[in-house]
Length: 452
Ligand code: PHE
Image 1 (cartoon, helix red, strand yellow):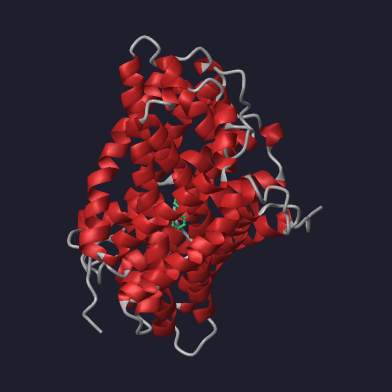
Image 2 (cartoon, rainbow, N blue to C red):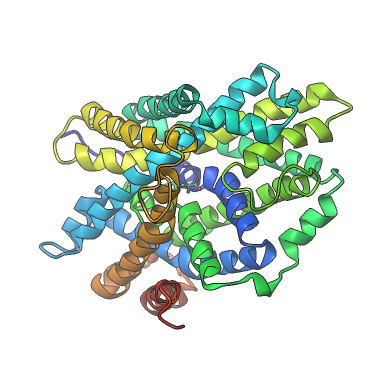
């Protein structure tokens, strides 16, 4: 087998990891969850989950990946030979596959909206809710766009780590940030801006229930790409002088910034148009944004057109840097079992298309088929991965790094073998060893109604 590559530069490594983290989760899923869970109070719990659970678990994943320099299954095989921990590796690969399948459907919608905005239609939509439902319920569009997204991901994956993943992420992350800030400013000029900002920043604690906390935790893991081995796989391409805590700090900061900024775009718009409520579900972003492009730029339509095209283009690119990391987790695993990389990639793409089709049809042909706890395929894939599989993965990772791994190995990874002082190392290890496992378990138990 050929020699394993690393990312070329530290910046490239950080941007690739941020590319995995920043995606539809920050814009589409974040606003859907904020809307469904009552706004500011949810955001507050979300930020706490990011800092107290996400950051330490991310450092944990980085340690596992960088120390083993292997895919997520072999990482556990190397670090804890002949133990049951390998199950966590397999769980990660499975979860990545699962998420990729339904995530590609939403990425496909983004592609479809990009096409429509290039054709000038998005800025002229009469009823954006009706447009969304017509688009997503058409089997050909929904499946066609989903498959296209998976094929583009596939093409980048087969180009490898440096030329595919690293180069692509470096180019688009800064562009995305600039566009999001521009649109946020535009949205703040809309009539409902004040109500929107209140919704975002004035917490109403009566809205908090046990499921709000589970949703916030799930969203934190989802948005940071944690709990399934994507960042562990990326960290296996980190070089020995990358500082893990710094890298994790940067990824968490960028990811949270993009999520909050996207709130600035979506909610002023939600409260400015009468046809949509904050808890409108997965269509929220796709229904509100066309209204922003139309209303905020009513006097300069070409600017609305330009922003629409750029926004969907960048959202699609952001989604792609995430689908790449989901795909890479499974591809690296299959490849390192001896399957040629392009064949491994085809297996991952093929299975995802199969599952993705079920999810894509959940808004049309299969909308009434609810085989799992009254949920459609799409809703089940989303619920099960974000609220069960990822937090479970996070729990196992914190237990593994906090209790199973040799303490010295962990310290060596964090301080680059004593080369750097890491002032918060002790706190981080405490969070990883005690706080994260206890808090995640309590949130699970609470959701199951154990404390009622
Ligand atoms: N973090 C990505 C997003 O926010 C989604 C993702 C989840 C990617 C898990 C990889 C692993 O869009």
